[in-house]
Amino acid sequence: MSTVQLTLLHAKYNLIETARIPIALIGSLAFPSLALLFFVVPQRTVADDPVFATQAVISLCVFAVMSNALFSFGLNISEAREKPWDPYLRTLPAPGVARVLAHVFSTGAMGLAAIIPVIVIGGLATAAEAPLGNVLAGFVALAVSGLPFMFIGICIGYSMPSKAAIAVVQVVMFALAFIGGLFLPPFLFADWLNTISMFTPSRQARELVIWAVQGGDLEPWVWLGVLAWTVVTFALALLLFRRDEGRRYR
Amino acid sequence: MTALASLTNVSRRFGDQLALDDVSLDIEPGSILGLLGPNGAGKTTLISLLEGLRSPSSGTVRLFGGSPGDHRNRVALGSTPQETALPDTLRVGEVIDFVGRHFPERMPTAELAGDFGLTELLRRQTGSLSGGQKRRLSVALAFVGKPRLVLLDEPTTGLDVDARRTLWDALRRQHEAGATVVVTSHYLEEIEALAQRVVVMAHGRVIADDALPAVLARVALRRVRLVSPEVERIATLDGVVRHEASGDGTTTFYAQDSDRLIVELVRSGIPFSELAVRGATLEEAFLTLTEDAPEDAPEDAPEDASESEGARS
Image (cartoon, rainbow over all chains, first blue to last red):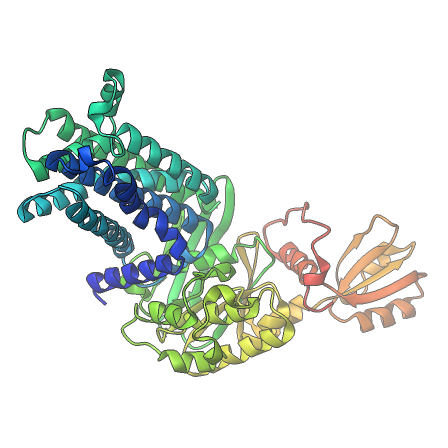
């Protein structure tokens, strides 16, 4: 079996496992579409303005990617650490990279599944619009700016038991969503809140995707911020992963 | 014959605890090797080194001539999840397929299920299985890839007698089909039923490595308990391996043949009372073996080591 085949195999069973508990999907799959339907579509000042409506759709796409990454990595890792099934999988003849990539793929697939209804509802029920090429550029920007959320999820997974991880993921997710301007557009923010917002990975992700889809200037704080969060959270995730190897087997 | 797997002067520390202490062991193809020892003897650590889950603090571990950490060397290795931790939401057939597809050559799901009595359960989610069914599935997974070497860590812990025998039968069939099996246990009965070669471990060391009958002779002890004013004289009688004073004034003697010891005792005319004879637990037998070993055994071995777990009580 090649690494690619094994990656797909593990990704497939990750997804089957997730899909068997449908209620677990609602939070990450349905919530972004519901938020769009209830909070954006009825507000015609936003929904009828192509620029604002597109930004609202993008914000909720960022939210979908973020919540999937946080939940999938944070909860799965903390649960796997409590169960001996994961160590068993490590005794099978599959390289470690196949299992990690499978996890990234299955999370990516879930993220995609959450984004598509948002885009469809946005396209049909609001004035949001963008050329196809820009939408594709937006997907690339989403994938890149989603990395810090993945790493934050990994950090949470490795640093606490699953019951704590559920709570922490929720708090982190909603805090980042509000402060990052994913639910309320940042132009409604007070100056001090806007300043804080600019330091969050969620705000930076939002701005990066908006730039990719709508064009305009890319402010340095956006890409510097995404880069900084990626490096810092990656380093922390790596540190916690290594520390865990030593601690798990005491 | 070249060994399927080998450990050479392997030690493994966890913090300041020494789980394996200079262990050397070759696993040759063909036999069922029983790895016997009380809890905490280092059996699981040894298995996890062979599975590539951990690396040794010192020494070398080889699996099919290479490092067990390299996944390519694990293609002919079969192992089993501990504590029956299966993904609750997957169906039995799916779990077998998932694991089976890691291997270039695999047993068909239906055939494996038939061998381990899982045919009726293939459509069930693993979360709905009983403890015994989960255990059978876990052990079956070790054989799905047609392995040359199978490592089973306590495969029947917590099973009732019937379930244990069903599993033993399945294991023997797989062994006859060509798999070399290493099975750990703290049940002497289990090792007796399955193994041809037995390695006894205690405190992270190998204290005996021999054919089954030879190990049985050393491990299968009887305990003779009595009150007597002349303990030291009794201790010199033929067949007494070890003796210890209990807090209540009685003394316990360990002997391989208790009948002969009692005949000797009566003949010698030494006064005694409150005679009681029963099989020694495995823990008690191990204590005797560890005292034979060159290194001194720790004196703080738990007195209350659960007697019900011994095989021959």
